[in-house]
Each structure stands twice: as structure tokens, then as C-alpha cells.
Amino acid sequence: MAEKNILVVSAHAADFVWRAGGAIALYHQRGYRVRIVCLSYGERGESQQAWKEPGITVDRVKQIRGEEATRAAEILGAEIRFYDCGDYPLQPTDETIPALVGELRELQPQFILGHSAHDPYNPDHALAHDLTLRSRVYAQAAGYPAEGRQLGVPPVFLFEPHQPEQCDFKPHLLLDITPVYDRKVKAMESIEGQKYMWDYYADLARRRGVQAVRNSGRKEIQYAEAFERAYPQVTGELD
Image (cartoon, rainbow, N blue to C red; front, side):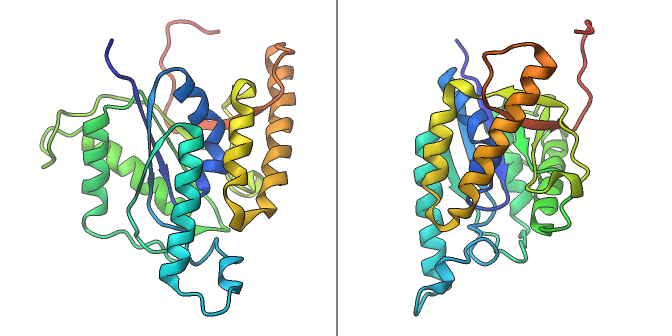
């Protein structure tokens, strides 16, 4: 059986945990290989607790964030890579898009998970969205100078931003993560520098679970994650 892969593009070292930890764990459980690319360690904008330590340095903050994100990825069953493109602002280099294209051509993922298009609270997230979609387009181009075979047309699912109402986010898909919710919780708890996020995303998973039941009639659902489609779904059936 051919290997099935997923690529997750995370602006910062913990974004994937809060927003797509359930999806990652669920598909790992189903036998998929999941690779997470963190464009940044989130060393400046999302590491407030670490900067309170006396004598802290940016390199030490990167180390802390990298260790936390690596533990979270292991709990979820994913492999993780760090591009170290800086933080506040995220500053991709000339090699960032070619590297993402290389990931896509190597993995040939069944689908891609990434950030939503708008986030007035964090421009790094919107930039990560742009880099993800541009890399997907370039990976499909026969003339793009990168190794590997051309990418097909994997769907792109955009995970829910922290304040969806301000980001024009529309939940096109509610994914039942009930079977792996405990793993998501453990992964969240490994991000000790952002403990204030734990309850928020636990509450969000329950709320999306309630909405999933209402929209499906499946009363066994307790927890869910919301995603928006970047491209239309093509189908022969309306169901």
C-alpha cells in the first residue's frame, strides 16, 4: 500500500498544536505520515513567559520553543522541521518557498493544513498562508526548478484562527476529533510557555463538538476542530 502523507505549515512553533492537533493525531492514528513545518519558533511574539526569565536570550527562547513543539509533535505522532525565518516579523528568505516546494514534491500529500488568509492580530499568520498557497501553486508547475515530480491537486484546509470573527473565518468543515482528544490535550500541555491557551482551546473543541452534533446528528461527537477550504470541493454527489 502506498504511503499517505500530510503537510502542515505552521507559522510559529505552537500554532499547529492549538489549531490542528486533533487532525494531526487522528490521521496519524489512521496510518498517515504527518510532517509539520514551523516557519518560526515564535520566539518574540508568542513567548512572553520565557522573556520574563532573568538573562534570557533569543537563542534560549528558540531552544525552549523548539523543545516544546518537538514534544507536542511526538505526542501527536508527527515529524517536525523548523525553518527559523524569524518572528515579529516573520521574514522568509529566498530559500523558504523552494524549501516548501521541495517538501510538497517529496511528500505528495493527500492534503495540506495551514493558516487562514486574514489575521489582523498576527500578520505572520497571513504571511504563512500566502507562502503555503504560493508553494502549492509552484510545486504544480512543470517548469519550476525543483526536484521531484509535479504536485497534483491536494486540497488545502485552513485551521481556525484564535479570533475567527475578526479573521473572516468560515467553518466549512467540522472534524470529529473525539477519539484522539486526549492526545491533543497532552500536546497542548507540553506547551508550558502558553498555559493561558490550554483552557481556551479545550473550550473551543467542546463548542465545535456541539456544533458538529447539530450539523450531523451524530450524538457521539464530543470534540471537533473547524477548518475552512481554500479551494472548492469537486464532487459528483451533493451530500
